[in-house]
Length: 105
Image 1 (cartoon, rainbow, N blue to C red):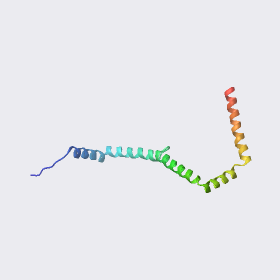
Image 2: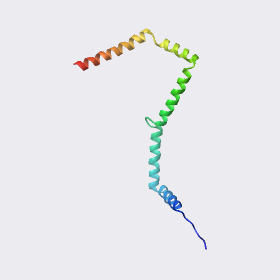
Image 3: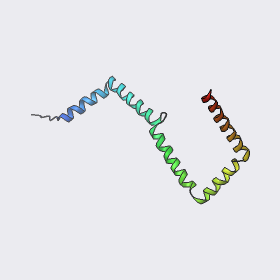
Image 4: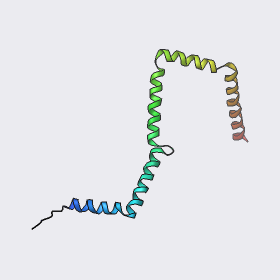
């Protein structure tokens, strides 16, 4: 005589496989995949944030090397002209005055 032994885990696995192989299972699987894709690639993705943080940290490390510090200072000085500073400060001052006027009137 032939004997088959089936454990509760085997039954659960078979039921789960049947459900996942059905139309419901495909829809469920598609929904999970879509949700995971949105989490991994969507706006404010945690994966994207982790990568951005890693790149930011690496750039900070590289820029802390003396050679790069001097290059960075030179580039900043090149762009940070008196004309540019006056322009930016003028805009900031205008905004501050406008906000003050809005608060008072």
